[in-house]
Amino acid sequence: DAGVIQSPRHEVTEMGQEVTLRCKPISGHNSLFWYRQTMMRGLELLIYFNNNVPIDDSGMPEDRFSAKMPNASFSTLKIQPSEPRDSAVYFCASSLPGTGATEAFFGQGTRLTVV
Amino acid sequence: AQSVTQPDIHITVSEGASLELRCNYSYGATPYLFWYVQSPGQGLQLLLKYFSGDTLVQGIKGFEAEFKRSQSSFNLRKPSVHWSDAAEYFCAVLTGGGNKLTFGTGTQLKVEL
Image (spheres, rainbow over the protein chains, first blue to last red):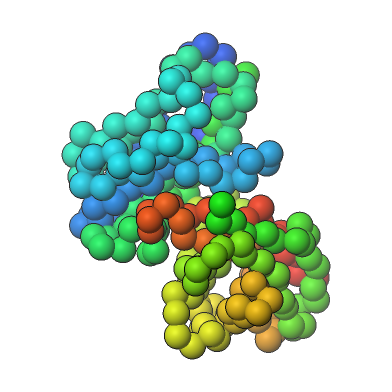
């Protein structure tokens, strides 16, 4: 099993540009989580999907952030327009049905730098 | 709100020495607690978790943790540290109806050879 796959691994963009981060969960997993890791705030849950439906997006910082899960094997996190304070490592995680966040497998993350 | 606190930001131990990383939780009921490890440039890997029952939990890579309700603690231990254990370690508590992990600030472990 290839694990949770995130792309790109690194992204450098200019302020104001649109950024799209991608995630492919582990096959058979039906829960998907997007986390953000910064020095100041640590690891924060941004949004959680179950069966492709967003269940809890209370962690999404503002309207500039949006996430979609069009099918069970793909999710995107979009930032438009991006700002320097969005610089962080963004992690995607997935889990099997019935396990929720109790058995989440994390991807290697996307390091985003907004200049 | 439910939370976990990791009081040590950095810890340095010699290879072969024992290790204990501290984690304190704040939660009214019995918490579901986790320890994750993050190696440089990598995602988080689950080391072990506690839901109920035996308060001493065994995990992967030779790690164990003990849940102590009286001290509101869930400290991670390893009898003999290897150089490859150098990484950042995160304690977490399950919140949000079982769908959200709230992480501590992490403890960076350095292993001296």
